[in-house]
Length: 394
Image 1: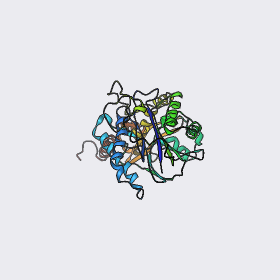
Image 2 (image 1 turned 90 degrees about the horizontal axis):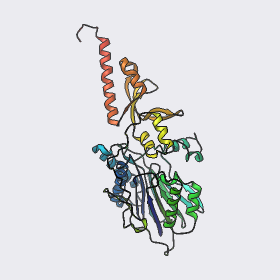
Image 3 (image 1 turned 90 degrees about the vertical axis):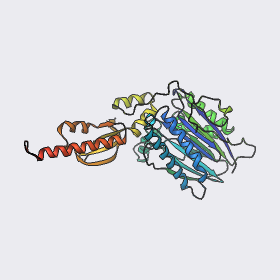
Image 4 (image 1 turned 60 degrees about the vertical axis):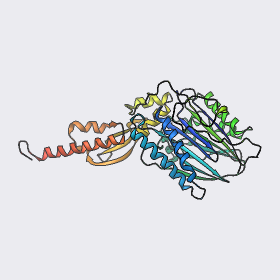
């Protein structure tokens, strides 16, 4: 099946640097949206592209499950880099990978970047958003039309590099001639309504013109985040523009903005003045989350849930490691249980109980595990104190 491709990425109107990365090397197309702040998000998304470029040759149409293995391997590489380098610790990236062979498309997906299919003039979102709001929609707690403007819409619940293991969605999509596919980071979908995206994809023009128009619309709407768009026409005539041969951000060196029309093979983003800025690794209060969401703090908000950890107590009174933050916003819990210990709250010394009950915030999972070990020792010491009367030897 002949393909025609258009690609565009843009830093947007608010961000200092572009943490999106992409690959458009027909028949392989990828969008990755990094998180963790420059340079961490930049490194995470570019590493995902680098691993995919290296491993994708091993995937065949007969073995689509290998696409899952490719993203799991990318996850392991990003996680390993973050573990070894404190300056990028906690980084992660979304990743939506599309491979087209003959009339079949295979998608491997993690995060809240999206793949859409336009067929017969109707637009359908193919991928599922791995976000807090996406989960609320799937559970029937809110309606899909409420999701785009929900205040917690950008809190991501699954990404590459955040944990040592990750679940990957695999989607098989038979294609028809005339189908139009869109891969995009949420810098587009958070700014442009689905109806406008549908109208753009259904309009005349080649895929590059459509990609350019979508990015322009996102910027005109405010451009709150980096915007990356890949448009693929399936089953086009031979006279249509040739597919883009390669465009990516797999290079990890300093980057500067270039005209997309003059792209020589690698997308380049704006280099920020200071490369030492790191986003905070802890969220100190629910008020901070509300403030960040109110000003469009997309990256910080989703980083807070996906990469923040604390040690607290569960409903059964046991010391528990949580991912997220202990506070609630408008009655909405922003935490998930990760591991429950055998230590009960009442087994701890009085001076420690209130601290644990309120949630001890830590910078990483390993720090949370060390905190639980310390609490276990305190519980044992407390038990020993009560078991041995004062003045008597153990």
